[in-house]
Image (tube, rainbow, N blue to C red; front, side):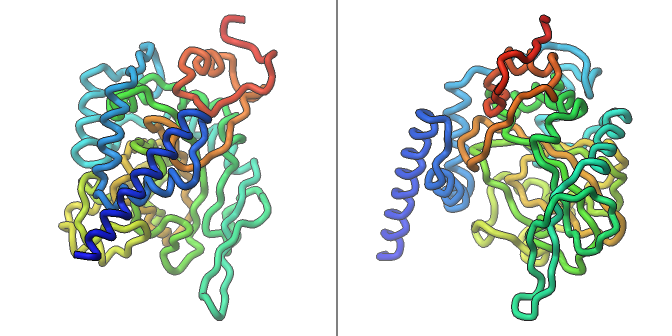
Length: 354
């Protein structure tokens, strides 16, 4: 009884800190660390119900984005096709598209990934702690260094590429995110990274153990394979349906080994998503997921994330500079709530009307 009362008091304190942190976010546009930490803990303590309630309130109070029709990656998508995708995500937690990222965009991103420096996550052996990881100095990825577990690209540099700006302004992605989140989506960030076959054991640092994400109140991620992905070259793994309620034994913030999840989910729920270069996946990564450790080769992947707003993981601003096209800047001006952390540093940047 005493322990139960203590837990209730603790959760009340979490709710207060979350509310105070969200109020501060509304006033300043920045998420305080204590508010973010409270949100994360409330998520697993309430089995996601706290986030579901907040997302429901935000969807009721926030208008939905009216996205222009037009071309893009899914030029042939109509409202019925988009609704089917969203139903699939709501049911399973993920959707693999039949359409692929166009070849020319894949080639642009692959050229970027082999010519622009990235930060390698280096694995070092230690007698006391086993394998230790640290980020090294930026270097151009050549696929040949066996100590590099993963190589991450600078978000600012990634966003300055024409290919990524085309992806972020794609009307179908915006429509899918709007319908799934039930409000105007905010782009919270993009990532692009190489994964290698350098590790003999799965690495938590390289996201190769099962986990669930909880950086925002509600969110949706799109992944794009920029290399062919086979069962031996690091497929994205997802436990179907685990984005909803989870077994009580799995309610904690951390990493999970396969055998622990296998005690609670049927074998058919474990999905390995393979596919050729250009494969696109949408996923609610509140569900259990991981990148399968590579047995051979290297994998290049791109990710963009949409959320209900920027409350959550503290993040920096993106400078909109000469690397951004007039079309992208025009979209940013038309839909400012979609690009909330994109900031112009130069007032002389062109617009699409010029």
